[in-house]
Length: 83
Image 1 (cartoon, rainbow, N blue to C red):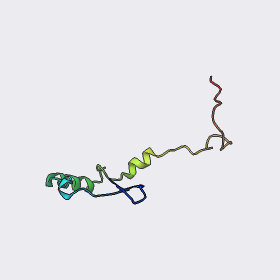
Image 2 (tube, rainbow, N blue to C red; image 1 turned 90 degrees about the horizontal axis):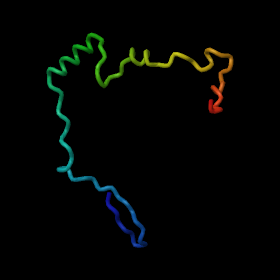
Image 3 (tube, rainbow, N blue to C red; image 1 turned 45 degrees about the vertical axis):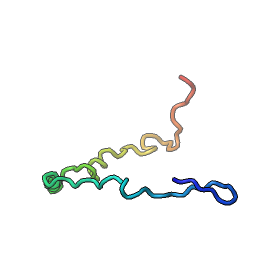
Image 4 (tube, rainbow, N blue to C red; image 1 turned 90 degrees about the vertical axis):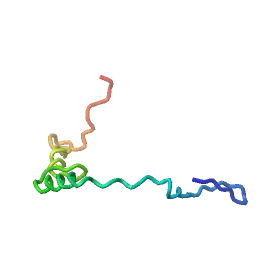
């Protein structure tokens, strides 16, 4: 960011994008063998890195609902009396 001054002496920050030469190069493409492996795994229904896995979401979901094991659904929990 670059700081500029107005006629009244106030500071104003404006965004000046970096020159194109200083931008990082684009990410390389995956090698063909890796793309083929990902396609094979996807066809077999296996979990893939970076993709949503419905089975994992189901297994990691909370199974206990608030108030499920007691008649008090708004029970505050154990007393915090330093025991």
